[in-house]
Image 1 (cartoon, rainbow, N blue to C red):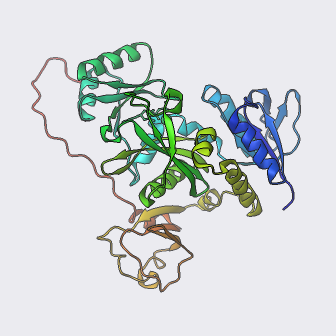
Image 2 (image 1 turned 90 degrees about the vertical axis):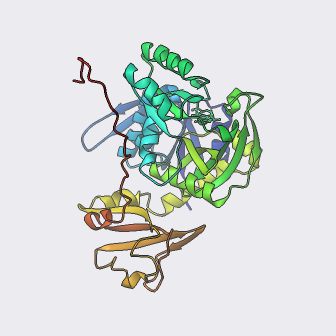
Image 3 (image 1 turned 120 degrees about the horizontal axis):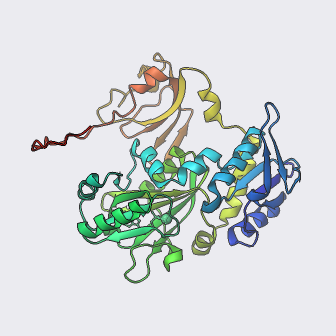
Length: 399
Ligand SMILES: Nc1ncnc2c1ncn2[C@@H]1O[C@H](COP(=O)(O)OP(=O)(O)O)[C@@H](O)[C@H]1O
Ligand SMILES: [Mg+2]
């Protein structure tokens, strides 16, 4: 293919990840330029969105690799969004980057799907605090600042009282905090799966130092290569897809019932993962860009969504579904205005499945079709039944 001009948006040209991305772009015969997101000017004009760099006109780029640090999420994402408006392919979109930075938002988005997440509560009112702590299983619980990173702002509270005090202190300092169930069985270890496109290109386990429960490398954690089993791999890819990230570092705890997603990073570092696995992860990212540009540089998902009343959704065939055991042609899906684009069955992918293909319980179907019809196949959200509490009448009732 023609050499591409690729912009790496990063404030740190000397950072390992930035250097490796530049190397990988050049190793595949393309041109890489490292640009500081804070040096862009955005000109928002109808029909002709534009960008300047360092006060000068910006030349044309084919693709952008955003490496937006957490301290400049707002400005950085705005620059990425501007590139998107100009039709430049961005590896991760501005919206996806912004969303992934908010631990609460990410958990909320993931919670609608059948993936394991750490149960999380978010409360503001002091009167809800104790209840939320107890709802997360009671102490020890994990308390997190909404936008912390590198393990800073993640606290393990040993007793309910301490948890309450920490939350109150942080709240009074205008900090938003999450309360999370402590997944003790993971014992200071977690899995980082590096997703590019729709596959895991490398994975490692991080092990916390000494008695520390946080496994972040910045907290002294060490890394080791790990062979992911299929469930972890599928969960990581699904998490990235739900958050619409094409490059993502998905962090999962090893819970007793399988993977527990804790966090999905949109600018995952390369040093740890390349060091632990010896895999050319930067090269995988560049290969992904080549593929996307060759195939027309378009987010098909978004295009398809533009037809009113139609959507692309993915759902699992439940064991009790009427679809189980039926061939696609006799399943009634086509009659209901639904086409199956791909089946994911165990570790296998079946693109454009034939009409004779039989559907099985557990199949993950990627479908395009009429929203009304699709809706009936989506999981119904189960509302938790709450025990009725006998509340003593007090004078100050809720308002
Ligand atoms: N609910 C939890 N149960 C057990 N360990 C946790 C939990 N949440 C976080 N940890 C540990 O703390 C580390 C940091 O938490 P994380 O949410 O990833 O914050 P950060 O963005 O600062 O990395 C994780 O890598 C993990 O080792
Ligand atoms: Mg983390």
